Length: 359
Ligand code: FES
Image (cartoon, rainbow, N blue to C red; front, side, top):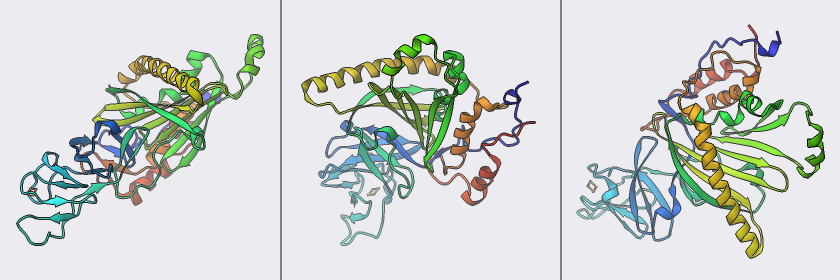
């Protein structure tokens, strides 16, 4: 029996990966930028927490907690004045960093602060950081980091699946081998503590003679996946002549339910024909991707993930679990730390190893 195919005994279950009670501290998509006009205020719920979002006259977006620190009125009923938000009930006013700047019945405002959250806009999307200060950048496509590109918002989808599970297919070696009959593997590289890249490679050259004829035309093939904050992921696939770049911005909306915003990227092309070509390619990519997602996700949605018998071929899945286990878990709705980082996360790090030990 091949040693690689022997079962591996796991002595420890993941605590953060596929956990319904928590999510990873990080950047999450909120709404498309063009869904929020200047002077508009909206109520939103992100990762179980009630929030209010508004856009001031300076065009900047502010996201704050939903309930007024005076008596708890919902600030989604309030009004935007310049770059500040006035509560509808007793008209207290808060500036864009949440400081109370006016209490109509008092001469001076009280030293009071409404909780605001780091926010930014990119790719036509408003994003929120779910902690005090952003520790890492917004998700980006690593292969486009130093290139000029255009982005285009695709479809929004809702799926009954945990975000960690919906990401597995694209790096599952056995899935690829079964479907495509290729001897492939994935090489991992940690971009930062919250982002990990898996690049597909061929273990040996199995080219059929016919493939050797057209292979020179297919220079520098790439298949690379980058996971951010255990939710959003990017996919780069194609050859040098034609590459597709995709981001699936993923946000849990209920326990075991996610809302996905697809974002497509394409290198900038000059002239009218370049513009038209890019629009056509983006439209085509969106149609194909929606079909693919709908088909691929069916199996995963009905799955009860439990990696009881991992083998060598599951290494990339194990590496992803290991990466997620090292991140900072926050509790649904409160956004408080799910557990002590000193004790529990360190414990996870030592128990979850990427090296396999056979029975
Ligand atoms: S509840 Fe908001 S000002 Fe009183």
